[in-house]
Length: 110
Image (tube, rainbow, N blue to C red; front, side, top):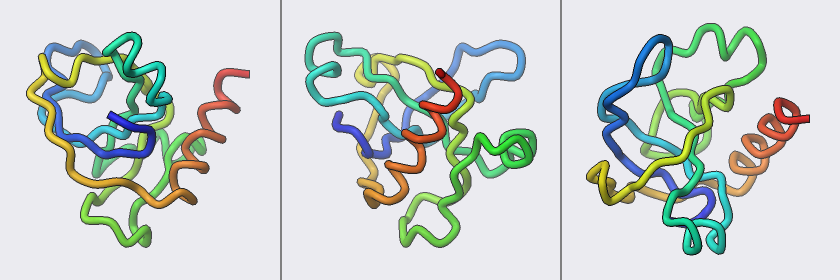
């Protein structure tokens, strides 16, 4: 799993307001981190995300030219095991989108 790739995974079991079900996620961690830990850091993609959109935590895929649609929820990063969650690679996002996601994550973590 490389940074900027979109994977379809099962996010169950989740609780509360966490994104759940089978959905696309975007890998935001480096390939070296992923290889070492085998637990990439990902952010979910959703068709909703009204709070994240309003708060500035979402990156839209509306005009990104990708097959994956919706918004990337930068406010919900998590680690996961793509093999244990039946992960399947879908596509790679354009660098401009990946950089936007990373910038929003940096703003949250500062």
